[in-house]
Image (cartoon, rainbow, N blue to C red; front, side, top):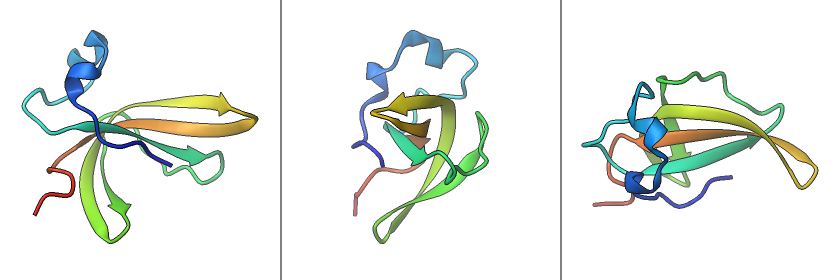
Length: 87
């Protein structure tokens, strides 16, 4: 599951220090996986994320383990390395 991209100005100030967030970069978003389907990614890693047929390069800013409505999920806060759905 994921949310729509949001502007990095909505992030907490802590992400602008030692988290790898590029202040001149593109939007951020949350991508979550059910526990068990989680890719092995750490803070600062770059990965490819696919949204339907479109593929995007993203950088992991932070990750969290959450318990949402009885389901364990692993959430990644990522920054897009290119504009989302632009032609």
